[in-house]
Amino acid sequence: MPPGRSPQADASKAPLQAQCGAPSSPKAWHPRKELIQTASGSCIRSGHLLFVGGLDGWDPRQRPEAGDIRVQVRHVLDTLKGILEGAGSSMQHVLKVQMTVADPDTNLPALNQVYVEYFPDPPPVRSFSGAKASRMGRDGLLCQLSCMAYVD
Amino acid sequence: MERRKALKRLGLLPLAGAATSSDDAKDGRQPGKVDWRPRKQLIRKSWTGGTNNPSAVAPANGKPPASVLSGCLRSGHLLFMSGIGGWYPDRRAEPGDIQVQVRSALDIMKEVLEEAGSSMANVLKVHMTVVEPNQHLPALNEAYRGYFPDPPPVRSYTGCGADQMGRAGILVQIDCIAYVD
Image (cartoon, rainbow over all chains, first blue to last red; front, side, top):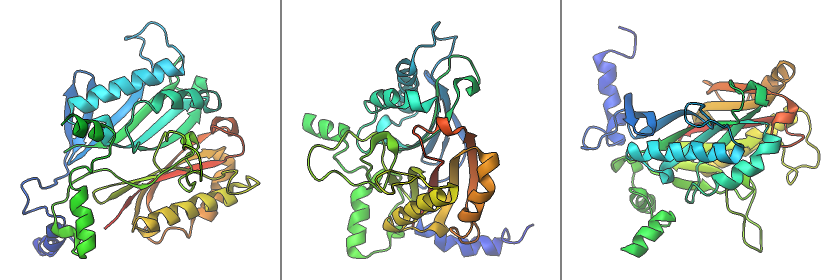
């Protein structure tokens, strides 16, 4: 048994757990990993956090034409909304967004115009990485997005 | 009821647990004494839309633009921070080299964390987007070292060309997740 894993060490951690309200509360937060499948797609739940994976702006199985950045970001955010609501959360609960955007110098302003319609105030924090259109993993793909949200 | 729904949609009603937390702060009670509930609390706005500058303030007059993102949010004991750019024209005339830009971004990060009651020591995870990392990473690390006390946060990065950062001159964007008591 590695140091820090002995029963004594666990006992000494009890006050810290109590501080977070964990043992006493019926809604105690217990991190774990649970796959949640919805009609729009799947995500992972751990405690009160949801993790939604790389949602692509275009999937040839769903739409014949790739479309421009507006079409793609709308598709991503509609899918995200469906997944979150299917998992008991919502767009209002989104905490953090990470995007990969093809040619952001060209595409970011148009992306923002659509993006801003989807999140009520305060919007989630966001960061992005840019890439050439040829480095997105598939021709025609212009954006990919992942996020963390909370769920009651 | 309809009004309440409308307010809720606009995010004007406190989310579950938010009121308890501020009452606690007033009483000086330990926040740990209440049930921990995840929620979404705005720590710092960002008025610069897609340029991600958490340090920018709202314009003195006129309607601020619709904010695309928040600078910093708190949920439970976690802080989430937007990507902080290494250069904003309203902070500095010249973009500067990678070391100037890393220091600038980490100074903003430190300021926002401390404003939120956290610190650089509580940062758990850092993600960076770096222009031409083969060329810039050694110098970046030199400036980065020293900002985070031991143990430093986990870190990952994505590299790209200088023309893939969303605007000219910017060499790095850094975001983080931190712990807050």
